[in-house]
Each structure stands twice: as structure tokens, then as C-alpha cells.
Length: 96
Image (cartoon, rainbow, N blue to C red; front, side, top):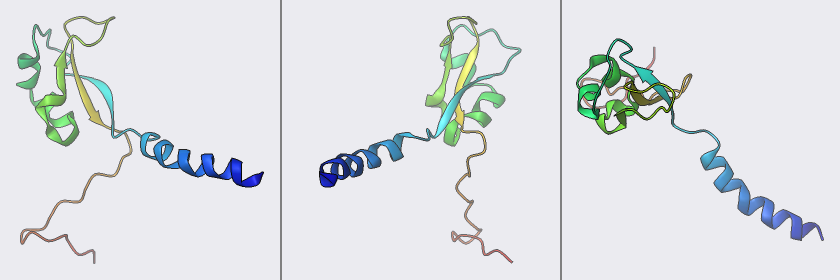
């Protein structure tokens, strides 16, 4: 009887663990700009800096229903640890 409960619990733990913490969240960017298309938002410094992995494919105009003509970006999750930068010789830096 216990085995019938344990097997589904084990099988469900992997997908739940993968999707429990998304890599990013939707945020507004470049609040002073009223955009007409995605290209306008992708040209701004603020949106490019906030975008997850600085990828312009995560920057959009008009995804929010309540605030039209605003730039939105799929940004890094707050408090998420970013991948460490590589050193000048292409290796991970050594902490002192």
C-alpha cells in the first residue's frame, strides 16, 4: 500500500522541482517611453539591461492589458543568483 503512494510522489517530484522556480518575471521597463512596437523597446538601454541574459527576444511592447503602449521585459528573477562571469583567461575566478 505504501509503495502505491510513494511511486507517484517520486514521479511528480521531478516536474514540480523543475517548474517551481521560474527563471524570470515580467517587469515594466523604460517607463518614460510610450511604445508602438517591440523594436522601440528593444532599442532602450533599460530594457536591454533588465532582460534575462540580455536577450532582446524577451522585450515586448503592449503585453499588459491595463497599461497600453508600455515596454515589458522578461527579467531576471529577483534574488536569483546569476552565473558567475568568467575571468580574463576564460576560467572561473578564484575566490580569495
